[in-house]
Image (spheres, one colour):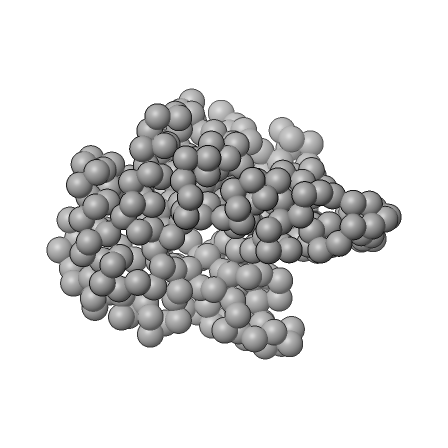
Length: 292
């Protein structure tokens, strides 16, 4: 089992706390740290936030939320093994050629330690502020994935779709392994099917309760329908029973996730922050090392 910490960039937005978090996470044996994404947060919105029962985005909209790619670059520079992932980046809001260049550069400079977690977004008002159509954002995301992979795979790449068109262009440097893993995030059936068709992994919500096993099963069926091996798609999930103070048996919790086919457990970083050094070291000793 692998273990990840989420919400790195908004829990630790400044350089000193970010470096402290990732160095301790790496020493404890965590596999990865995730960074969340919003370009802007409207003061008022009618869209429903899908990961909280209130339907409202938690936290202070004026709080620092660093760009995930820039934050990941800063923390990759002070680590050697730890991996970093956007969890998730709102893909339809980004130019796919620019994003392919940024992500490949980050992967190249970090020695191949980057994953691109993507979602299609829920905040219509943010799309409007950016001048990006909210409609057809799923189809736009599918094309962006294909276009980025084409740019990463070879020089002189071409792609022709409804939203992206380019002919015989080269984008360098290339990712270390030839491509960057794309992890599809989301709570919807569409996200589960996208992960099965196109993703290297699937990351359902760890916020608002959702029937994650139903979505994971849907991902596996979609993979089979697309002629892919469902076992090649990494499944990520939360596990509240492993959080500090839960009082639950970690072995039982991990065995349950293993039986479900989960390959990486994702935990929010906030519960560890009160005594970060001690709590991460203790988690590494009591959970990561015995069950990795």
